Length: 213
Image (cartoon, rainbow, N blue to C red; front, side, top):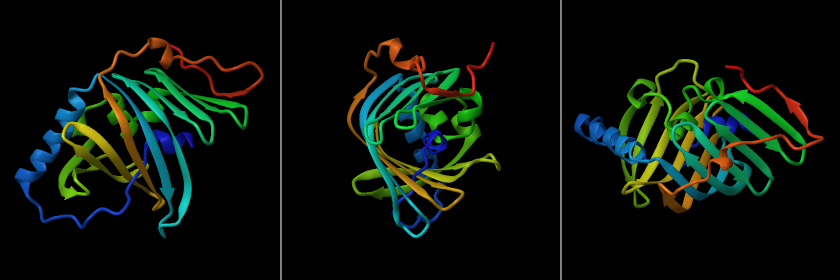
């Protein structure tokens, strides 16, 4: 689950890609840059689903997300109860049912992933090739393909309603797709710094350690 959230994979049923249009592709890149570039913080409800290569539903989840750029985020999953927190340097993943906390360096966990994109780390044009996917379901879509050959995912689609990111659809290397939908979006709210810190509860198993330096 940690790897899946870190990759934020999602694809889903998008329309066939339109013919190449350099002007439209440039507009699609600007759409992503403008929407995310002006984002300093975010709070929203989310719904997530994962399907396999044959379209069969593998899992569903929902919860609340908070972001404070650069680098900080908090994903609270209600069912199953899980928590993923980053202060920009460290990522903590708490699986409540398993009573386990996994700790990883953010630089290793997020490099070249959509999570990095949302967290405001890395250069957009350097990390992704961006093309226009037209409009579908009332949203303007941009397609992002990672430039890194070792990326865990093949492509990411972002659906925008004006400046608001409403959907993310990602296809991973195994052919699985993850779909995220955002509701109740609060753009650039004031967020308490304590949201992005975490101390493992007493008695849980801890895997990994906080990176030094």
